[in-house]
Image 1: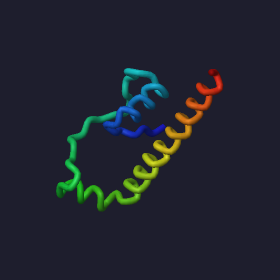
Image 2: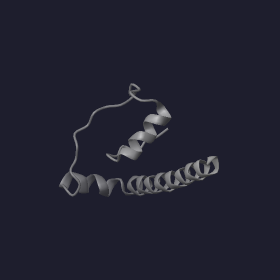
Image 3: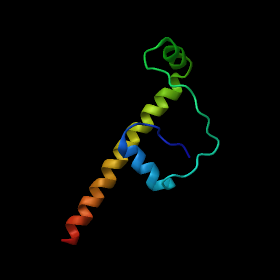
Image 4: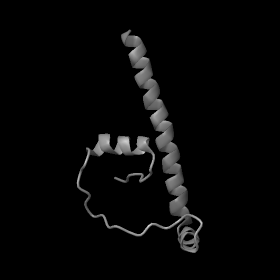
Length: 81
C-alpha cells in the first residue's frame, strides 16, 4: 500500500481513517527535504520522470475518488431527511 504524503489535510484525514490514527511507521527512513526547483530537485526529477508522472496521476485519482465518495455521502444524507 502506498500513501500520498501531502500537506493537504484531506489526504492526511483519509490516510488516518484508512490506516488508523497514530500508527507506527514501519520501514520508513527520514530524509532531508529537497526544495522544488533546486538543483538537487531537478537532478532527482530528471532521473525519476516516470515516478513523478505516476505520483501526479495518483493524486488526480485520489481527488476524483474523494469527490465521488463525498457525493454519495451527500446523497445518503438527503435520502435520510
